Image 1 (cartoon, helix red, strand yellow):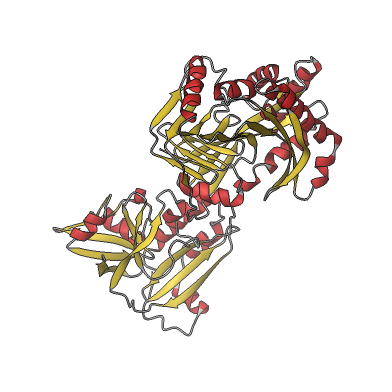
Image 2 (image 1 turned 30 degrees about the vertical axis):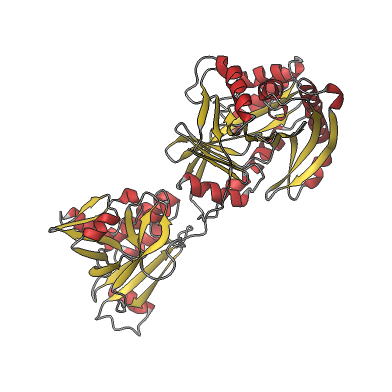
Length: 544
């Protein structure tokens, strides 16, 4: 179990406080309050922690109790491949919008923070995804939480509340604009939405602090982030004694992500929204024994859904004069940091033996699968290469002696354009190969496809392992171990390219795929590397 929040890391808890039924929430927060006097605590509350009917499958409240916090360190990352699927169409969004307007006409609400889901398929480990997205959405309240129930990646820019001694302040965020549309934040509509939430939070603070001490410290401040502007205001108050049970009872959930009036608007939200908000719009944060605490409103968060798939919820405040298209575009703007570049190409490297390309059909099938997966147009290339001839290769470079083996390297662009080169088959100079210090991410989808995305394979030929300690491959070759007459190779699940030669050896029963580790490498009678261009080559691993 691990919690990163801002610049703090929490590991090895002394105790866990977890609650699955809302009837136990107050006693759990009372227990938290007692521990917070002597220890650090870190954790979260779900949005419906106080209102959930029946038992929850995942904790409504989850906090670890710690002796101390550590400094969170950054980590290397690569850009993962993401697929995003909306779970609510614009047509259905318009219907929900009309329903909200109807509720406003009836006087049930003045502002509704309406949210909906997207599913994000991420071919990456949770840690890599966190550090990659944190680079794009680096906020003070970024959080990574992993426990036995779920994984949460939060990139929230919004402060729920902060405590320092006898002072508490909250900083609601209401108002969003694109970087090229800053003037939008100065419109009367946006300012009115923000002020409405300020009044709500002033009243909430007065329930837990000295009412006379409640004051608005700053109004309508503009925060600039990498992809957008946000409008915030700051309200503060003082109290005689910190009581987290009373604080959460009074403030939770934050009014900026419900609407006004809070309780009735939460009923409207429950009736209109599809799916479960989960930790989204709840609270994530920590307390310290020095009478300090910081909690965020977890917006812009990814919640584990199922294998490699995350729930990403997004929303905006809807008032009577809100425009459907404008609110829809605001939601899309809040997702900008999830966008990844698509500037990579597919490649195949093949052997021309003097007459034909060896394993041509196998190479074409592999490329066709990759093109289908990544959405590349491959029809023209596949058609042109079905009957590639020696004469066509001669036209590429007639300076070569085509009576001896050559390397044919093909590169396919997303739009279907392709090129290929004919290269000399040079002698390999290495005999010993070291173990790389770079650890591969077995969830990295690019390891399973031959593309120009190869930044993890820098430097000389080396042997790579993944984060589970499983043997993978080398920079350009699959790896094979011979032990007591049996030839084995790493399983594809470990994170490696489905090599053409590897597949042929397995198909012919000459090799078996299985999970392999450093111990297997050490005890092997013979270590070989191989691909369809070079065949099998015996090497000596440098295990120092």
